[in-house]
Length: 157
Image (tube, rainbow, N blue to C red):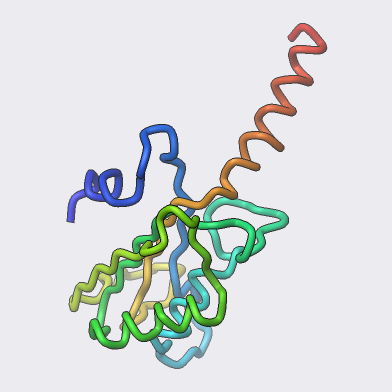
């Protein structure tokens, strides 16, 4: 797939284009972990502590998504992916803005990720990459960047 597809499918308006992402499983080499189920991959990918953006107070109910793309690699069927996505919604692990309730795009690739010699990450037969357009990213700008700018401005830096 092309990266431009994410822009088209996940961004409803040009100014709403800051993404939250995660990857599952993240297991270091040497740890003995059984193969993860599709549910374990999704559950781990949607834990805020595993996001690639730090949210100190992420709330799955309040911090709504506009769209989500989940891309699986390895032995994952569309039935497994769709049923576990429904389970995510049912267990209120994700919530969508009212004006865009459908939300999910699923990508399936039967080829597993490449195994690399001397890699610090343990090779896995199934993986999940999540990219979501979430309103919580607003706090990153307000809480961090704006406060730092205001502080520098007040000191005439």
